[in-house]
Length: 274
View 1 (cartoon, rainbow, N blue to C red):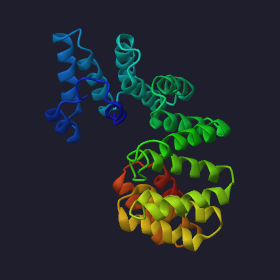
View 2 (view 1 turned 90 degrees about the horizontal axis):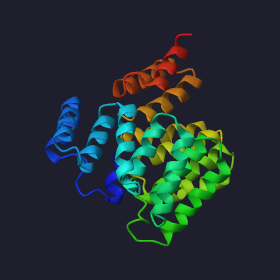
View 3 (view 1 turned 180 degrees about the vertical axis):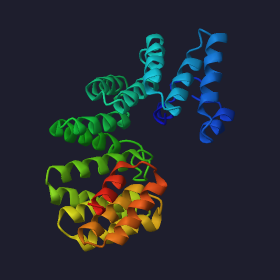
View 4 (view 1 turned 90 degrees about the vertical axis):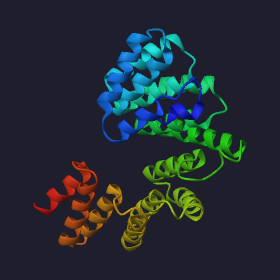
């Protein structure tokens, strides 16, 4: 859980460095077993409990992780990292209304941190509560722009980048094309080296009916990240619309090679065979 390192409330890292390598190698069950045993040996250790929850997330067991985060927060109810992790887990389980409430508690406890605001805005947008989402994104942007230089960095992991891109996508969904275009241009000028920015620019161009420009933007994204599944699907969709079926098939298959089972690519291939 990346959010746990943002706030640094916990006194130990969520996963010991030697175990992080096992997670990266896919040996997550070994890490879960380690922290389960650590919990048995140290039943009062909240650090071991939070690390177990993180390991369960890495192992793809969010229901069990949620129970562990609940137990952790019963002991440390004001731990921002724990609250963010619980909210993220609820979000992954599609329990969006509950996630909004937990993010809101994190906001109350950390009013100078933009990340809870940004995450809450994203969930509000998913729930269709667009006015609330826009107001929350704006609140985060105001906080960032009046905060530290590090927060105002528009890098791909920076809070300002996340707030701008989230707001731009929300503008697109509302048909506020000029507002979206202004934000997209700002992001693109600042970070032309980030594939996701070009995907966003391509989505904007496609919404404007500019298919050639959209295809160029998606291919610019692939030049930066050839294995990006979303960019490959976007290219495939445009080629499919142009009846360039062989090229579209190649794009969808490349996406599936990067992310086996990726549903948008599977759907695209199914349309070719209709």
